[in-house]
Image (cartoon, rainbow, N blue to C red):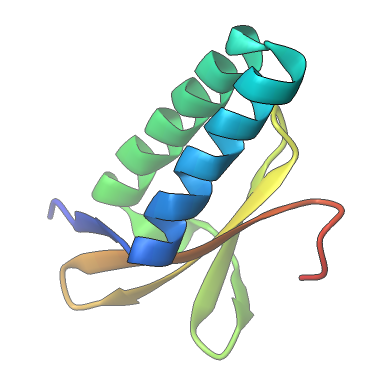
Length: 93
């Protein structure tokens, strides 16, 4: 079964802000590309089987993006995966 991926508006904005930050302040396009590639890998896994990642709390799953040091939080309802938050390791989880 192929699951659909939905990003909340807040996550869409955070992804844009992350890219903007790394480009504007560090001129680091390599990091932005690495972030995008790791996100696409995770999205592919979530499309196939979103339950491979552990439950974090209250039906919320957590994915650790080791290459870029961010965490994704999401939940699954029927055939839809909703990504609800993305935070840097240093942010309060």
